[in-house]
Length: 74
Image (cartoon, rainbow, N blue to C red; front, side):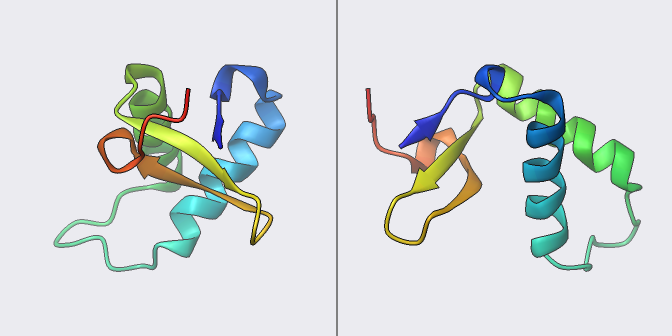
């Protein structure tokens, strides 16, 4: 199920974004990107619609995925 990020409290949204960022590991390529900048990049993708927050009923977890990888659930 897609979760509209606009319906989340700012604290909840920030926690989801930070959990997503830290879960992805620490290999950021040639140049490490500071956490605030990574947070903003993910938020920008959510605002642009290129990424979405998805909740999985089976595992009771949520994650952020590229919107192209998520089937239309509307």
